[in-house]
Length: 170
Image 1 (tube, rainbow, N blue to C red):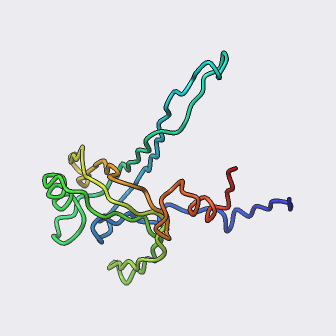
Image 2 (image 1 turned 120 degrees about the vertical axis):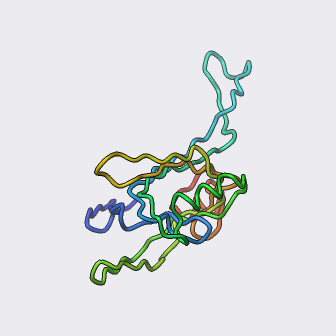
């Protein structure tokens, strides 16, 4: 095995380099998103296990928590759009993508780049908060509905996704 090398200048990613897209639109004025992947386990302990617990992988659950400023402009993926998606109960496409941000005198444009993760989500736990002297914010949870996919469309955990991540499991 060759020596592993690390370079923080190219290995690490700043949060503003990636944005969350729902139904093709970036979440407007996103402040923070928190991705959670939660594989469950199934107890398969038997007489063959001796005195040790024995587990196998079960169902995979995944979700994202999102916090954003509330935009009053329609056409943005902000509170009003999220509220309508939540009320519809439908699973919609989502992607986490690299973005390029261009600022021209305070007017910003976003160019969508490489896709890192994608799948479908439902919107739940939507809330809006406001305080005197501060801008309104909203938060919501996006619950994974179906498989989580990598950039190539391979299900996370599949042989193809493991290979793309440089992992071999025998």
